[in-house]
Image 1 (cartoon, one colour):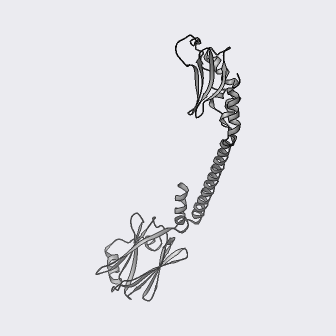
Image 2 (image 1 turned 30 degrees about the horizontal axis):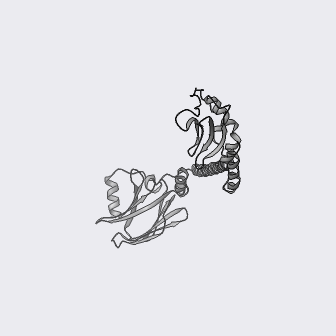
Image 3 (image 1 turned 60 degrees about the vertical axis):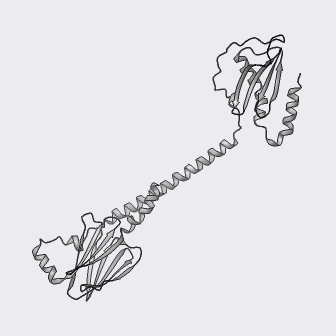
Length: 298
């Protein structure tokens, strides 16, 4: 967003203030033309009289399109504003005894061109203190060195911004490709996870004990799969619970007693469980053979 704003402001750095609007006010004793700029106007105003035509040159100013307005006043007949390279020319058709005075608003966002009879101008000059002529016909301009420096600063900032955006795009693309190529191993086999403290469990239920299946241990692998050890009679069964229930192994001797024993057993089944999670849809037949083999070991 910052660089977009700089791009939008670039014309202002290069050509100066832009005329947003102009209004003509026809009075009994004068005609005022009020120009409004998008930024404070700090350029040079020059005027040249050629008979009934007053040519006003505004340096470091621009306008989108030329415009012509018929005023039909006793002081001003026609007004034309047109861009001329890096400046604007305002051509006013006036009567022979009319002169033009220019003045800016206090914030420099507005410029007033006043057309009035020469006699009225002389009387106003006698009744008011003299005004600094540079404020009307010699408005201050920017130094050429400052203009060039501002131009190069904007260009350098734009190039740095483009380079940073390109580097971010390449980094994100590489990171995405790395994540996609990494094997999806269940978090169960992350060796950096600390082992839980061992906890004693109830003894194995015998065939004569009342009740059915008892859960000895269980551990969640992901939101869809859980490994559990179930006791039934004198046997213990290691099963994988999820979309499909798979018998991984069954035990009658060397049955895990503590949680640490159960974790060690799961680590020994690492390859079988990891193979299940990485199993592709095209390997369904091999997976079914694995289930039959696992179920008929004993």
